[in-house]
Length: 310
Image 1 (cartoon, rainbow, N blue to C red):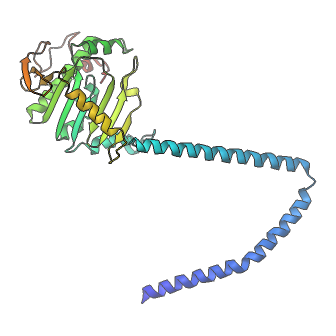
Image 2: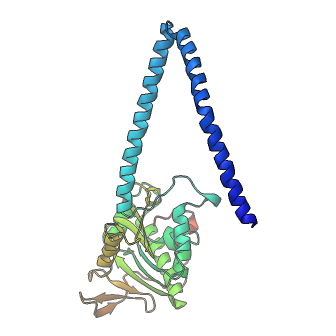
Image 3: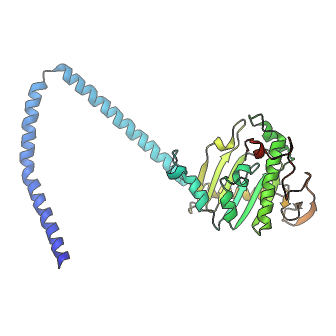
């Protein structure tokens, strides 16, 4: 009963307001017309005012058209970005200093598959504050590709970094430290596998669940200072998530890239069908179960305060 009364009262009030507005419109327009005529009679001979009014109107129209054109271009670009599966990101940090991509890396890491193609892995997952450190611990399985510690790519990457403290030995120590961390995870029954590629790194690609995080390595620049692009799967057939995923799989299945057995400390060579051909000990020396003795050249880079380059 009360509900029906409230509905009737609402309709009655709306009816009264509409009637009042309809009855007041003629008087309102009459008052506006008389005021406009008197105002125009006052300013019609004021040339300076008329010129100022024309200039102001022209400026307002120019701003309006420019804003509309920029909005149209932004909308067109947003459609292109959406078709590529690009996730919108804000340049400002959100609440608690987290960026949206950081939330994705944290929230999507539980029981998801993690694929990483990087250089040393130090700042990516080995360090406790690494962007995928927690995701690697919580994921269901992980497939990781890093530089060969003694390969030409690691030496070339060290030479292409402007920081004089980053040497091939530092890059090698960072990779070995990441391998040591992965061996600890593997010893805890974590489903994690590692491959070591020899050439110069090109892309820093991480795929966590249905999101792909992409940066590129640039000469003389820190990779973490490069823009990061986040692509979402979301069922978009024209998106870039699937090509990036297939690119990682093509690198992972390349028989020229050996797999490092995290249990036996051996390099595993396979054929194109994935069948194991042979095993061989890695070319580097020293156990990876524990950190190497501290020295000026072999101690891990982060223990010296040297920045790592993932």
